[in-house]
Length: 123
Image (cartoon, rainbow, N blue to C red; front, side, top):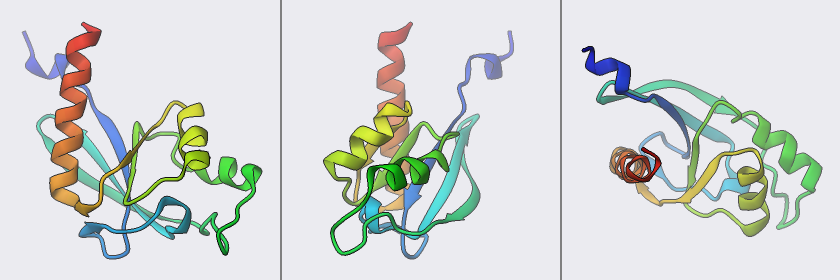
């Protein structure tokens, strides 16, 4: 039996100012680093640029919904902080928001561990 058949692949968007740390609030992020987990490793896919949805502490729900759609291929979005409005908008699209400030590589390993734990309850 091919072990790769049982492996799930998934995509994560990371809010980061420098590509090394999760150090940006979701609503203020201009750059998201996109990673795919596939067969035991994280693969950097691309950077996605967008206009921050939070302007002077305010944002429109329609603008938030449009911004979140850019992540429709992602299973997780990680940022240093994610407000309640953004979190509910993200969840409404079936994406899991995670507040996980710190080193990107460490965060990706934590997300993988979380994914593994979730899969224990699905099977």
